[in-house]
Image 1: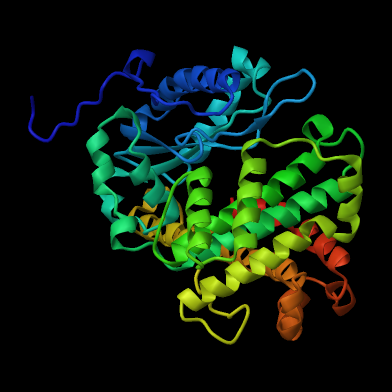
Image 2 (image 1 turned 60 degrees about the vertical axis):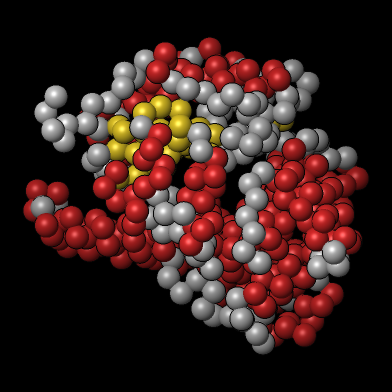
Length: 419
């Protein structure tokens, strides 16, 4: 064999190693997920053949047996979670993940699994093999290392990634999590409020709003534990650890109890009652969540030595992904003239930075909106309004319902821009 030559294992289904444990609590759903994943992995590898696939790793809720989907009266399961995959290749292009996703969507639509699942639940991230050690110490990288689940290829490549649990997760990661979940709740609330009967998949926007509440609420456990340098993967395990923290007097018992309830609701979502759906018109179901979010957020700021301000301006001084990927495209464009004019690459870089900035700002405004609903937030009312004002008028910023509607209208555009 020629020295330095990397020989990949075969791409067929026989070479795929699905996780031994369940991917979802419900056995029927678990069977559907395993069936589709077993077919999808060879397709992913074949589609990425020109990029030189080296390994494919599984992470996220499916690895911990917590993949969630909803099934009403008949019809397919509607995924609420993702199957998170990380593909390591020799030659990574910025468009690779998008191309793989598009191919998977086409294959899913033609497959028999489209009758069992309402949508393709697979999400793919791509990594260049020679740059693994230079990845940012993100929560997703930490979780992937702890998951230790290689579906195909060279499992030892996982050790080439940085170990954020050992060396420290980037401080802004927990901030980013709060912003993401706050934005998701604004988006879900806006879609539920503006949907007409029959809109959206199955017309169950209220269900997605309830799920966004439980997702934000259960992830408060991640923020609290992460703020003290402890990382547990799987929402059920985090909920149990938070309960122990409450017994030790380090977390309010009421907060621990609510995190436990939100975690249970996240793992077993159910359609809300008409009365609860109607009560969302004055944001009543969010009141307790906002109070818990406020306490957790203040604790996070204290752990990061951020005092005084409720929403410090330097929460996310740079949007890492947009800036990093934009610079990478810019360097490659000037190093390889065939890839396109330098000015076009500069425009792409500027657009990536702009998209990242908008995402951060909208997430910060969404967080400000939910924090404003906590009784303790009155002291910071002026600061909260200043964060909301760039997105709306002063009159709208003073009315929580109108503010949520205004922010919600921005979410589709920002998501498209940010990718």
